[in-house]
Length: 98
Image (tube, rainbow, N blue to C red; front, side, top):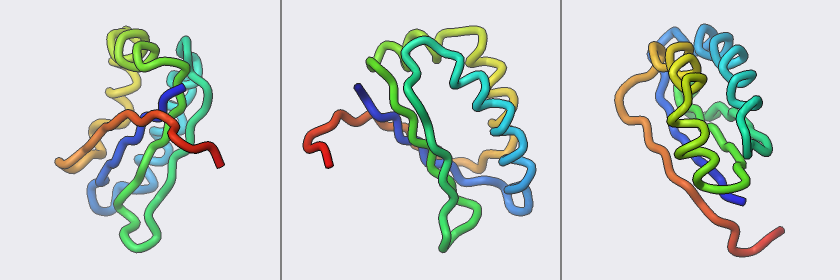
């Protein structure tokens, strides 16, 4: 299992619109092969900052199965218009289970 961690800054005043768009986009995300689960979290100190945590069975499920799919283009079209520059995306593997 791998964990995808994405940091997004959302345009000022567009947080609610982004959350509504993400509600549509997450249906696409959850339908993909290798998808396990996800969480969208909003920063308390900076309400324009969000993190998305997605667990995938393999790295390829995300990088090839999802990111190279037609569904990914629709997913991006829903949420990217709300982004400020500075998105980061990283993948992590579990070292010590809690």
